[in-house]
Image 1 (spheres, protein in one colour):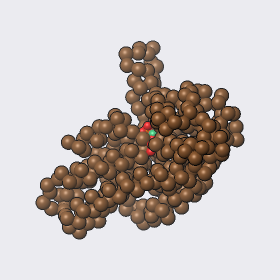
Image 2 (cartoon, rainbow, N blue to C red):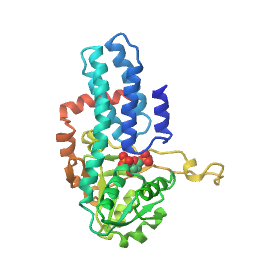
Image 3 (cartoon, rainbow, N blue to C red):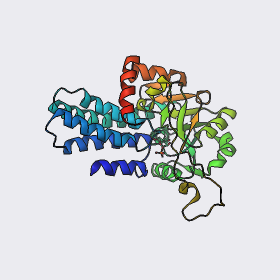
Length: 319
Ligand SMILES: O=P(O)(O)OC[C@H]1O[C@H](OP(=O)(O)O)[C@H](O)[C@@H]1O
């Protein structure tokens, strides 16, 4: 069934990347809703809420996932009839997927203006939106080369170097621990993000904060490309973004014996404080991290009374 397959694809990282996870979840809700044969609105809402809950539990850090689910489910929860709910589900899922893809292109247009001529860029992990920015600037003739990290333990760097090579961008592939060595050669660093908190901190692939620190030390701009649905509204209520801890085997490889008593820590993400982030580029503009609460309030449209309702809603999902 489409829903359990999608949930499994996301948790096993066959589907990965914050934006892609969000679009895949919206599509799964749409397809699941279309497959239901409920006779009443209540039964439909019930089924859809269960589906939303299953999807939201797959990966805990990327806030794009609950934001997408919330956006799609608002149509279902606000409907007066079964037909309205079905229509709203379909319309909202389509709109989210379309707007999400369009946002990536808008961000690329804005970000490319930040690239100096003959730019040398560093990126970390595999971000669809960061790569779109690099490729756009390269199309404009302003990228000399990219330093792309390996991204242990899942090695998403291989996907990045493939995508950049396919786009004709010259790439240097480096191990994660080489980031500081190469930073002096770099003009700017650009990454994606899985979540931006209300204080402008950036939650992204493990190792991002070390690279941001190196960029700060070397006085190189550290830029984050983030669709607005990667801003985390609940952080205004003081909630923290959970950092996903993944299996030890991702680090050790299967079959590798560790000495007795040794434990493996494998957090998938880390937090870069706002002081190390020069600019967050969204589809509605390029801002300092301190602008995050404005994005959450004015663009995502969350007011404090809605926070309280949404708080109850999301906690229904067992987060
Ligand atoms: O939406 P886009 O920019 O593609 O994704 C951004 C982020 O998603 C990835 O997470 P993972 O590989 O799914 O753990 C990385 O942390 C990457 O920076």
